[in-house]
Length: 325
Length: 174
Image 1 (tube, chains in turn red, cyan):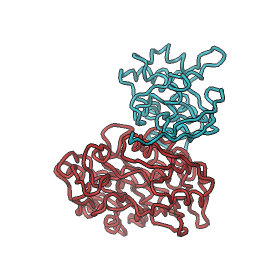
Image 2: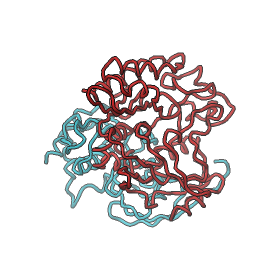
Image 3: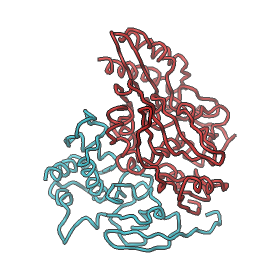
Image 4: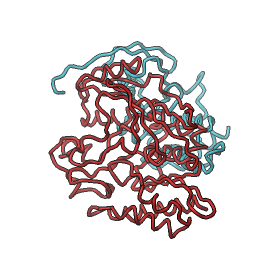
């Protein structure tokens, strides 16, 4: 690991000022960043520790929503009674990710900032457009069984590994950030980027911007929501495919619905096409299958991951059937 | 590496009740601090990437992967390792249960398994749900399925899982 200096931020302006130095990075729980530093993928010259900022609370918002501080640990978020009661798919998503030890370390802001990645990105002996722009993407023709089927480019086919962010995408969450130019709110579905021709940029966050909170709006439909994760072993594995869905049925028709997929793209995939098909439709398998087909019509599977198309559709249909039951 | 000189930083922390004021290379993980500087070799280095759990210790009462924690971030923290679990010469109930259920073969993962189980039982006590908890609204009941899910961050390459689960079940019931 390359030597680096360490600074502990005392407040938000101090954190933003400190990270302005070239080569500086914020440090949250470190579960991804420290690992990538050990692999030689990340080589910061200064770490600005933001875990002691007073951002470790989940607080009510005036509109009835919740503000999740960026420093709230994944384990505390999943255990919060308000999250479990009003946004159960978010608690389920967090609990489906990583391990008990890692959830105790990982923060809400850090979870969003973990790198969109694949095995080639993590191996510094291999080319990777995300790690070394212009060097090529071996995954396009190589090992890509677990990689993207939606929104990828010839330059990068990696997937965003977060479970938490999939539920946040479904629930219209907003990311609150502060930087040297002031504060701004970024809708979570616009926070992560598709790779295009600049896969080295995972998010729209500027280098000197700090995530301070994630806001959940008041969202009654979220009280009836589920997170379904399909993976190669029962626990402690990334998703092949995952779905966060919320459904409200009134008089047999779908009054409100929210859907996002994980494991399919460079960012959490909000399924707006499927939602449009479902809104107002008769709640049942026919509509659920039609919605899945409509959303996944855009899929462009690679040589070895076409299985994800059927798997994602089935996961969505089963989740909606459970919610409608 | 790269001919760049190490950066040093001061950190004070408490390990198994003993205060330490240290000057450390900022790259030092908590695991390397414990093993290489403080002589506490109970926590093991397995993968060094947070995937195997052999390095699990308790930081301010919560289980954590010592390999992913930079020691310099832990100023003021209290760390408990496997060496600090026994009180007044009496083994911790989980240590006793691992012995009586033969919850190991080679023993390399055992300190991490036991520290993880101590933290895990406190999480259940606090009412934290898990991925396999059926009803998120209620208090979780600890059965074998819950133990397996909650302990999935600790790998045992010998495959002693049935006895590890039995040992934790017994200690939890006390």
